Length: 224
Length: 134
Image 1 (cartoon, each protein chain N blue to C red):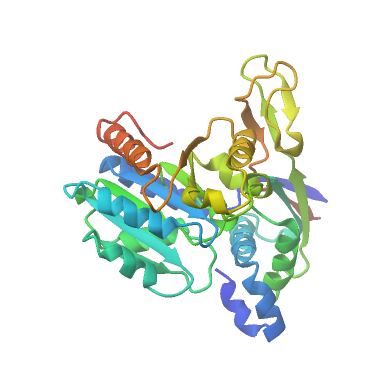
Image 2 (image 1 turned 90 degrees about the vertical axis):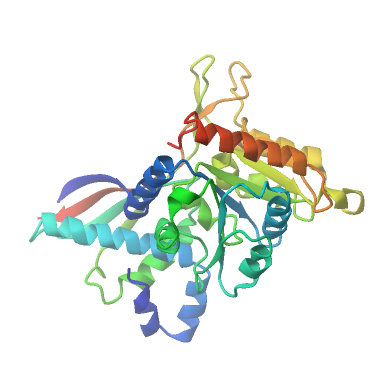
């Protein structure tokens, strides 16, 4: 019996494709964010509020993933930015190949920001690099405050956590301080912004986005 | 990709597969890489593959094992033994250089209290080795 040492990443192919995407994003100075949450945490609503507020001179493009239906793309298209729905047909995550395929017809040089709304799932999307600058995890106050402990991987890998639906805090038994401390215990440097569809925290979120956009344009921020 | 073999499975199997789509595509990637490796080592009979799965990899090890059983059917890899080494999360303190296992997800340094420690292990999702029968 002998052994061959392999020491290779299982998702090598995805990793290679993600590296190619990253190179394209760098070349065209596009900020790419990958938004991940459980189903129903408010990803699409956050994006609606974001598009509503974004300066119309910003050139934004959106990819939104779901198992079925074009509903999210239809919701997001109202703001006039190009949106494409990725229907995964049952697959629980987006991978680099899907991103590459859906971006193929778009002239990347004419965009500043690519927002990827991943499939609602806190587990599988974690493993797939899409060439993004940042993963952003969303947790809503109608979920459990121990989710950062139950699904630590995504909280470890996310630059930013959006705590959404905070306007419901008076009506639900959710301990926001505990949720934030759980998130910080698994990822000490995680940035946290509290938002609601009524407008809470959206200025702070837009400021974060604008800062990152500026940093990508100036070449200060390069995704590794 | 080998997901197409799902069409050969019974309905009950397919229902279970729906819940482990992610692990199926991971198993698929493993077998694709083994096919490649087999080309480089023509004639060698691989008896075992060793994977390394970190607790931060976002992979359920039981699902991975079940997914492996499903996917190897009719691929020529049926006799391959799957061995999985699970890797716990380890942190390093940038302040005092202590290295420690993050118990119950607490990542603060147990030596000096530094909160912002760095993950040095636990994110692995790797093919570590294959064993070859002589």
